[in-house]
Length: 380
DNA sequence: ACCATAATGAAGCTATCG
DNA sequence: CGATAGCTTCATTATGGT
Image 1 (tube, chains in turn brown, red, yellow):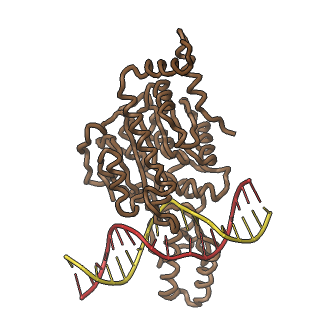
Image 2 (cartoon, chains in turn red, green, cyan; image 1 turned 45 degrees about the vertical axis):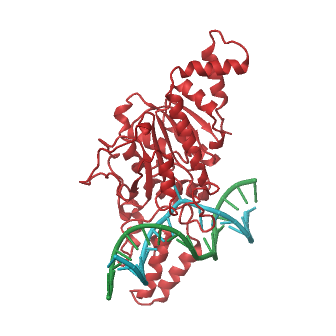
Image 3 (cartoon, protein in one colour; image 1 turned 90 degrees about the horizontal axis):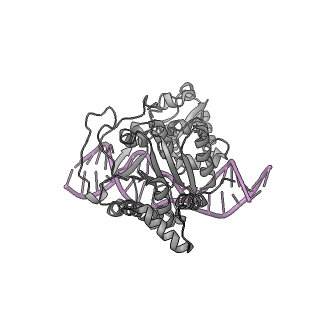
């Protein structure tokens, strides 16, 4: 679960064989949960140029576990983490818990950050179990019950005989986002967005190799953007974003990204698309023509039907949401095919001319801009 | 309409044991 | 080496309140 290596590990793979058809640029980066139903990662791998997935646990980068698989065509040489690395232990990440932490709770790190949390009766049952044990030390049976609940629901000690779920602000810190990144939205929306997101430092470590390749910045096609983990990671690395197309269906997530973009003094251009199924080859041609191509196609497709926590619809890669993986695949391959062609810009103009039915003598630039801007969706 | 709450197991992996 | 136990998991949804 350490892929080709993590910071401060002696064993680091720096070279691998990539099929020629998968070599960049453009570079791509795909992510999903590591523990899927059987056969899923084989399907993903075969759809993505048979590249071997790299499995990394974010426990090497933050205080919480997060086992994820990544398939990408990035170089492996000279990876570097964002420094300083964030705290790797619970005590350092959530300072207030230390005072109440019992010695028999041996946890050093948290389990995976999920999209929902425990309910009050769990905290109540734990409190009453501790209060009824009059002695200083609860019974082994009580300890076992409490530890099982604490691990299942990722709870920390916040008072006398009291365990609580993590606050959204604390999760933002652990996941590597700016303080109050998701502020201004309902608690449940914040938890869902954060539980579904990238761990920024883990992503940044893998993307860090792009910094020297693109000193003047990159154009990004960000699919299933969520709360913008990819964008935050690139920003933290120090890679300027010239143009970013964010494809995200959740309006709350879209607002989070736009808010972060506005607050971080971005010089580039941010375009929103509200559904991956609205991406067409025509739009790809337009963006590629306008931006001069994409340098990075990045995204983690929906894990709803793959994730272990799903009791009802864990029906694999062809499930209702997770099947959107195939959208990622065709879009990536379309981008690579379109960028491989010469005179792309001219081809696109000819196509537009034939559709519009009029010539655009000397006004190609205006037409390009007008059509491209038409795809941008304004925030309400 | 929006939001918070609370109840809802199994799959697949790893560690351990004989 | 196989069996067994132990552990973890980017979730869904009916329900009720505001």
